[in-house]
Structure formats: structure tokens, C-alpha cells
Length: 468
Ligand SMILES: CC(C)[C@H](C(=O)O)[C@@H](O)C(=O)O
Ligand code: SF4
Image (cartoon, rainbow, N blue to C red; front, side, top):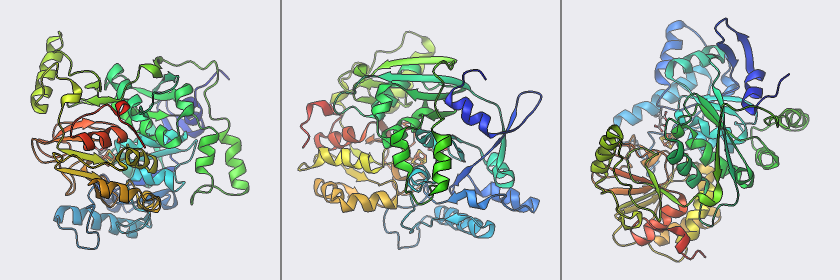
């Protein structure tokens, strides 16, 4: 057989049938579901009088609509209350395991899946959510699907798919102190654009990726979707296996050995061909911050808002973005004052993210000009772990709010919103118009950069701050 990429290998392993036009029926191993994208899919099943093919391979939890405080009180927003009630009822009716809002395991699906060992190397994993790409960090082929596909997976545990092309993003060298995988992601998207990965599955490789923790790789794969890719992947290695071993849903005993025999083959062959290759030198990556309304609108923190593009179409888009963001070309990034700080989302709400932010905040205070700073752990387990390490005290002493797990301020589907006209340094993944609330202005940053902005009240170069 000819040389294959990691993507080729996982794909080939899951092909059930090939149609004349090349479309493949692909078996699906894991299905995560949340309250936003599933109601119609359940309705469709009901209307057709069908059951779930594999409820045991399906795991549900609410994350987008949950409030992040006062969890014992009834949910004030009727729409959100209904979303949660419908998900709970659907899970009960169709026999799906459901982490309710107050369960210790509840959190953002993309944080909980890996944490519970539900996400495994070499599996196909889907969810009605674009950031499903996150799970690729463990070497799972993971991608977002639409509501009708959710219904198909419910009924058949398979999907008709066209294969994507292979793209390699190779990053080599050591990242400077204070530069994180979030910066690698923002730097990459700045380089290739939000359409740069369209039609491709990106495999991240190179010594920089090898040196990253599993959680750092999750941040990177999380944002593969913002680079337009169908999915992000990192070949599983010893770190991956150590991360997975012993998790509640991971295989054990002989099943573990069987799994390892397959997982150890999960790497691209040395002579495998990629349709596209992007090479990045880690030394070129500064802490990276967005200035506009697309994740590709970024600049190094020691840079400035760029000059208006000479291309007329791009110039018009830039003017519109800068008008929304109330910024001028040439403004140094470090002169941008911040009103709000949000540390959270499926991009950056894991324990290492909280540790990184807390290291900056230890012994420091949130600037008086900051109207609100909040930390939202990605899951109940992350929250408990952070509390066991005393991180909650560091955040609270600095002036942050310490909240319950959920999507929170990443998108305005719950009470956590950035008021119109205010500017937020946010560890999330999308800076779209209105994303954090109508009229809200978002600057995407890493967790240490969010903490630094909280302390100084403006976007700040973390490399210039002393960290305890
Ligand atoms: C609401 C949900 C379907 C959506 C997604 O698909 O990603 C959300 O999670 C987001 O980040 O915009
Ligand atoms: S945290 Fe944000 S990006 Fe992630 S699933 Fe929730 S809304 Fe989507």
C-alpha cells in the first residue's frame, strides 16, 4: 500500500462502503451532544419512529445556555430554561447519558470529552458544533456536523462523507517564554487566513508540537476550524497515551493493550504526501492579538493595527472592521485599553490555562479601569482541580469573578455578555461582530495575555512582565 497520512489511516479504518462518486459511508465511534444543535434532530427521530442506534456511544451535556452563577436557582431566561429541559427530556426518552447542569462532570463538551476518556486516539468523533476539531489533539478524527447529520448519526451511527485533502502545518523550534499554543494558532490564521485550510484536514507536526502538552495541542486543534479546516490532528505519542490512561471511559486491561497496538500505528508515514504544507519557525511567533472582527485580523503584541490594504475589497472590509472596533490603522496594540477580561471557552479553560493565567496574577490586582474580569473553568472537574491548587483564591484576590463551567462570554447565549461599546480581552476563539454581545468588541488573546491585560488595563506584552 502506498504511503498514507494519519488522516488517511483513520479514514480508511472507518470506511464501511464507497459509492461510485467516491463518497464514503464512514462509521462514527463517538457522538457528543449539547442543547443548541440537537432539538430538531430528536424531533426527526420521533417523527420517523426511530430509536438511537448506539446510545452507549453518545454523551450529552448542556454548555451554551447555562448560567455560570447561582446554579441552584431556576434559570431566569425562559428560552435557555426550555433548551435545557428539552435536552434532558430527549436524553431520558432516548436512553442517553446526560450530565445535567449541576453534575460534577458537566462542562463544555470539548473540555469534558477528552477529560472523561470519551475522546480516544483513532476514533471518529462528531458533535453538532464547529469546535469539535479540538478532539483532534488526541489523534481522533473529530469534526462538527449539522443538525440533519446529527439525526443521521443518531439513527445509523454512520455518515456519508467526502474525503478532505491533506494539509501539514509544521512548526519547529522553541516558543519564547510567554508564547503559547494560542499564539501559534492566531499566528497561523494570520498567515494563511480563515480560508487557508478550506477543504483540508490539518495535521500539526514538528518539534514545537511534539514539545506541547496535550492541553496546548487542544487549543491549537480547537482553532483549526478558524483556519477553515475540516479538522485538526496531532499524531498520538507517549504524552497522549499517558493523558488517556486511567480516565473514566478509557479502555482498561487487555482492552488497553489492544487499543495501544492500533494507536501506535497512528502516524503519517515518513514519505506520505500532503496536498499543502505550511512551515512556521517558532522563533517568529510573538504573543499574538486580534484587532479586527475575524480571527485572521491579528498582529504581534509589539506591533500595530496594520495600514489599510491596497486591495479595494480588503480595504473596505478592514474599514468596516476597524469602525466596529473603534480603532485606527497604526495604533500600537499595547495602547489599546480594555474594559473586560474573559478567561474561558473550549479554547482556553483547562487547568493549564488557568495555571498560566494565575501565574501572572499572583500577588497582583486587576486594574481599576477594568469593569469586569471573569474566569470560567471549562468543566466541573477543572474547577475542582483549580480550587484544590488554590488558583481560585489567586483569581478572586486579584479581583476576578470565579464562575461555574459553561461557554459563558464566548458567545452571548447566556447571561454573560460584554456590554455594547466595551472592549474585551478574551481567551475564546471568535471575535465576530456581536459575538460576545451586541456591539461588543473582542480581542482574542492567550490566557497569560488576558491576565496581563487585566493587571495593566490595556493589551500588554507578557514577555515584559515578571512572572512569579
Ligand atoms: C452554537 C454552536 C452550534 C456553535 C458552533 O457550532 O460552533 C458555537 O459553539 C460556536 O462556537 O459558535
Ligand atoms: S466555548 Fe465558545 S467556541 Fe466553544 S463550544 Fe462554547 S460557544 Fe462554541
